[in-house]
Length: 386
Image (cartoon, rainbow, N blue to C red; front, side, top):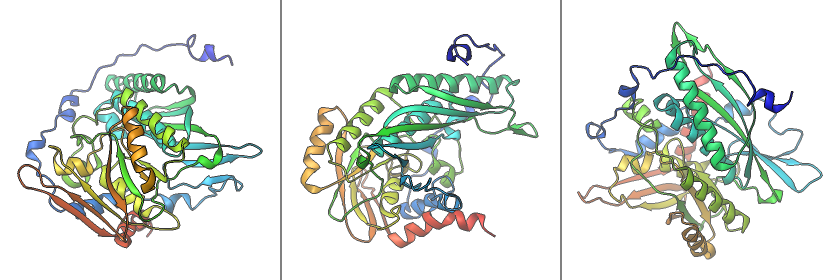
């Protein structure tokens, strides 16, 4: 079928749409009534065993994920990578969507889903080249569901245009309701990227002791809609994290440049659970070797929980050899991407010190790698197996 008949010339429904009456309540969040984090180590462990964040190995090891021995990077990193035999190319594959973000703001949530999928591919060393979608929603005969659907599509469109990524296929699943209660609006996105040459493929876990840890991007007070807010405070409220498509594009270009120049040992995007979870995953997600880290963070006026567990967008954690750390920081500065050296890979523990703020309050995360891995690596199996 000619593509134009399916797109520009296709039939268009103009159904009634309007935001639900509860939308304003969903987006309201008064952080002043929420106590800041005290036991940061305990919070990190709780987040690591949340099904949203925990390792999905219990699922993917039950089926063939080697794809006839073509798999270069198995599931468990930001993106899986498969070789294209007979060439020096590989394809990276990632799927993403945060249904809670899309509930709170369908447009912003869909934009973030595109940005995170692209960021995952970029962290694997791949240039994003195409997207497919699976749009899962409730009953479109309800104006609030149709409103969610329209805004989510607009978000996908705008983000894809910003990144130059075409939507090449997709499907829609409506009427996902039980007793009149709809699922969260969940536009699942599958994105593919090209790695050339194939040996440029990069993974998320730390590679060797002594490497410097560099954070690209800016920490903000982005606690709305976070996994931290749900797990610790039992709230699903607020506005999703702010996303600047321009800043995201600059970050992704910077990461691809650094990987292309051979300066990166590992790259991992910050998403669910925030910076602390990202660092923990860098320590324990390797199928071969677990390496600890010592990190120091400056609050710069942020709440401690926002700094550690906020889900600010457009952030990537890199590990690089000490000899190239200054070059990496200089390259990021030249590309107008915020960057800071925050620690080093060392030891058999994850230690994150948050410096005291102007009121003299600081905190520390200190956990051994075995405990971190157990919470992250085994919790899904504990939850699902009898």
